[in-house]
Length: 448
Image (cartoon, rainbow, N blue to C red; front, top):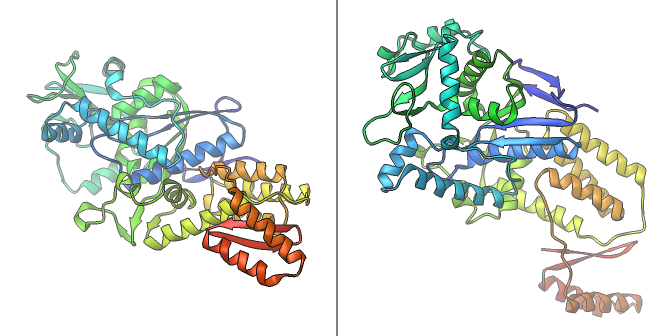
């Protein structure tokens, strides 16, 4: 079986063919670190972590790079308001990001590059674009010539003419500095009091788009397997990444482009103006990270996700069912052929563009089979491995000796047909959150 990926650039489902056999070079745009990430950002982080985990499940070695944008207008503004340096502010929210995504069961990236550590490489990249006449200097700023780019905006399935027609005469505050309205900044002249770096064009800082191109190519090479991010990055950010990267290297930048859909709150777009803006940091104070992860991970990444209280409740109930299944005692019933069918159903679902909704359905089908009396070391290992794709990791839980004693006493009472005592002990256990299920393979327990 072969993994198939929906490629945004070609608008088609394509078989995955890596640059290097058995390896995946994957770059996913990370946060701009001026605040806590919102739940929509968390959806993207979890979606691509799940995709990365599935590649690893299938035996690939994944080089997973996700950046921190720590030079930006929003960071400068927030740092000034807080009375701290931009680095102090960025350090604070990078630490918060790492803490929050760890609570969501996200694996650490292979690398989390920061823009401030790649300033020399950014300047060299821009110099090369100027040398190749793809960029020009204008009063200390440097802009990319979109008109010279090969099929600019192809990722957004548009032409430059389409974009010009849609602009309806709108101009930005840099219009007098540009040769073309859609030219974008590679380097910006620093304003008074702003953080800056020396360059051949004067003190300044990089534009947003150039940062990811530099860090991706420096760490993964001129061409990478997969570039991912939220659908909101398709244009202009990823569009501009393609233009500048391919202009500089003369090579295809990424072989597959993947974009996750947005997250709504109670069927409404999340926004501060509507008062429904939720940060992952705040939500994790009230919702267990594994429950929130389960909600975020088990919908197909390209489908919009709707956050509701009911959805979180359902995630909690479903996760508890899987946990109780995982913790069942082993039986003597081993059906390797049936096990292979459940593994195949899971793999078939996830090979189809990482269809998490169908993948988790396959896991629940397997859980039902397990609960019908099929659980051995081999079955548990396969079940555990599939759960891990969704970031679900259960710790082994043992009953305390008092509960074990009560279960044994109840078994003796049942064997002696003392059903009154057996029922009384069942009620005692229920008060302790232990529910019993009598099966042909013996008594099984679950914890509320």
